[in-house]
Length: 80
Image 1 (spheres, rainbow, N blue to C red):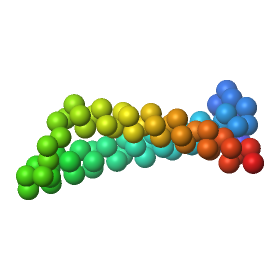
Image 2 (image 1 turned 90 degrees about the horizontal axis):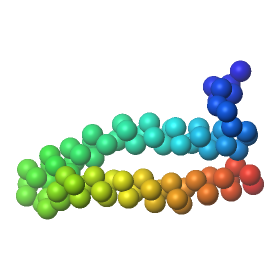
Image 3 (image 1 turned 90 degrees about the vertical axis):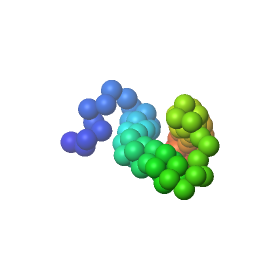
Image 4 (image 1 turned 180 degrees about the vertical axis):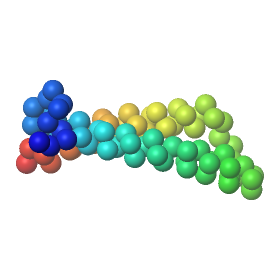
């Protein structure tokens, strides 16, 4: 039994959900490092003009654009 057999989707849906899960876990792990890089190092040396709200908005936009472009591309790769 595979780990993805418990998902209620068919073959390609199951594969796409696995890709989404891996991307989500990777994203959650990288958010604190991105925050520290933006508001720790850059602020320390005076290079940051980004607000926390703008940083969060950019993060959300990046996730949405990545999903809009990445999921159809992943579906084509899985089918082909």
